[in-house]
Image 1 (cartoon, rainbow, N blue to C red):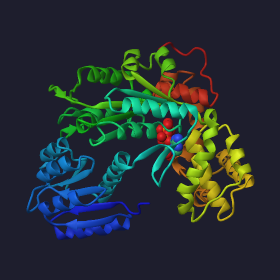
Image 2: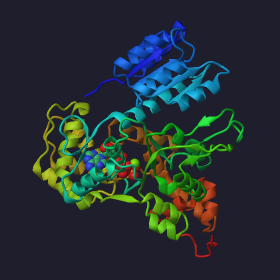
Image 3: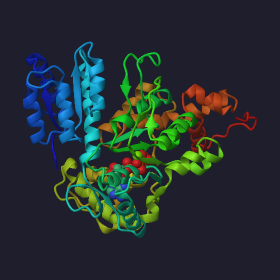
Image 4: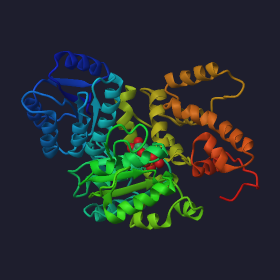
Length: 476
Ligand SMILES: Nc1ncnc2c1ncn2[C@@H]1O[C@H](COP(=O)(O)OP(=O)(O)OP(=O)(O)O)[C@@H](O)[C@H]1O
Ligand SMILES: [Mg+2]
């Protein structure tokens, strides 16, 4: 299994180079440095680096030319450009030529670390192979030999080599992202970039520019042109994740792009041709969203030329034993357990659960059980302990914030909670939604505005928490 991510830093200013090298090493990266562009290109082409960070002005070969040539030989290697003041236009040129992103000097180290992490994630998505059916090695795998999974593998094989749009559906944690990666890797675009955009994670106002780019001055804060993900993914594949969360006005623009195969940057007039294969994923019930006029029917038909539907985990419980063994093997090393084992009873117990969080929840449960059982065989008791803990929320009420956070952090430290942010949100959210809808006297639009979420999200949360807006909700 691979250890540290490796980074090639090409920078002729020795002070900057050594400074950055130190910081990045402290963050767990392996960093090689070079001071000439031509050397950088040669090394980057010859060795398997995960990310290249390069200065723009370099002896031997300038950064822009380096980007152009390196991207041609290794289109999946993310390159981050460091630019001097005033050379933003060149950097933008570079993103058109395939650079992942750029930072203008002077920059905060955090900014570069942030970009590096994003670039690594993008590189992982593209390069980590996904095997189907059975994990043969240490690779990531889509585990499962159940009938429905077999037919999904067949479908992937059938459509992968085409450029057809695929809509991937399924509840949270059912493996939509894995499927998207498998389609990409088996496609004839596997050598070209794969870029994923999470439509739910980017505020609505910024999503359009994220996708299509913008021209300088097109809105406050747009102080330079920006190349969007569509242009960056040109020739490759774009995953529009959580597409059900996109606003209807942006849906209309997306539809036009899909039909015309050209994009217009925000605030721009030029039509830029793009050749991008679209994969879209969502956990939402799009038919219901269409009925509520929250999702455009025409876009739905355009996207769902081929649909892959991942069933909830409890409907493929026969796959659970294989999954459990796969996760044990995968997470044994991080728990310090050399040869993880589980009793048949414990597997049986895992198979009998309903798994609302699907494979992700099973994965987390196995990880935690490993930590509890240590070198012993995982027993039903270990499993029960994990399941009970996960289901009992930290009580938020009647506690000061500090006390709540202390309790939460205790759980984090003991490996009982993995994502403290998500957990905090989950603990506090019901009250927030309840108060918002009560104070807005049942007006969903108003409550959604207050909380800064979409109406769709508002409705969904109200349903989830069993809250009911009053009947005099205005028709929207
Ligand atoms: N069939 C499978 N075999 C092995 N691991 C799986 C399988 N399906 C999902 N996983 C794992 O479960 C986790 C969740 O999968 P993934 O992110 O693909 O789900 P998702 O459907 O995109 O979820 P969400 O709707 O929350 O975005 C990941 O860690 C993934 O590796
Ligand atoms: Mg996902």
